[in-house]
Length: 257
Length: 240
Image: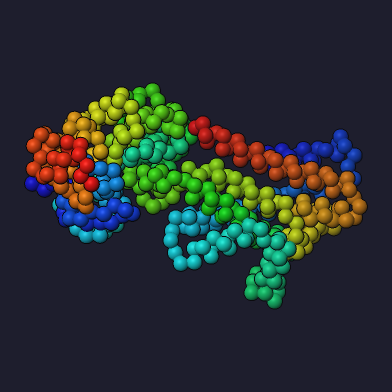
């Protein structure tokens, strides 16, 4: 069976992050946690998966198609099957609902977008709002639609960022340390939302340095140490009985880098 | 608002004994607004894409382009007037267009003066938009145009300031419009290329200080009005 997302022998250098020969795959409805110490290149890997840039070597395939072997238009369609939440919420200076709708809006044709803009001006909403409202309800933000996103707390902002990515129902959801700055309550709410994404058959890649979180939410774990993946496998097995010696030390909290 | 202002000026002689005909003032205000608003509108349409390209692209000579924009912000207006006059005069490359001493020539000179200001301030505004906001727009499936629109929207207050600064530079400028426009009025006193600044200069030189002061007050009121309008737009955008 073809994987939803497959990375094969990818090597890349970005700023100070260097990794070589990275291979992994994600299936629909699966949460893959990418764990490793800070600065090892987890964010760089996720940026490659989000197609921000082309890897120096290796291939990235969505449903069996090499994303860098197709036209720019086809790549845009593939890119639109990916959602991403960054470490910082990165919300726009606009109401919460406008933020949550953004991915839906850019997928509309320009005539529809213009019509939507006019409808907004005269205060008549259309169907896209309902999808975005539903995504906001997944992260527990009903009633906040009209509030300016910049006035939210850090936790609420990050939940809006999650809803913004969830709203357009992507095939793959990339989460780059989404809870690293959050309190336990907001962390729990986001982890529930991750579980909701899994139930919607979305393939989730979660980059985190929080091993406990990886253990709680992930089906499989890829441990990135040094310049590559030291070990990848079912979360329970990687945390309970790692095959790789460096993974065992890392999981045990020992210094391996 | 402009129409209202003109009506108000038309109505003034009924209450105040002004030393001029009302249509003299209204025609001067019309020329000023026409020239400056058109020049700033064209300049904004030109400046924004330039600011986006310079701000977010890497190309050879980028620092030179930035230096030219910054230098242009303080460029002497009389020199701009001289260059535009040379280009538009009958012996110049654009002489056959017959634009010299017309309101359109004044638009061209004000465009040249306002563009570096609008581009420079817009450049600072768009480059101040955080990279993670651009990344989010891209990651949500935005095209380059979508990302550019997000940047413009995020930088809207800075861009409004840029347009306002450009309008201030254009409408208060006297040197170049005097050279390329000629400060022409018809025999009945109606303005052809006479705007507020060139009229103030003329009236003051001829010793009609009351008229010059009145024109000066209108000029200040116009700038304040535009300032307030832009501020109001910015304020409503913030709460929407």
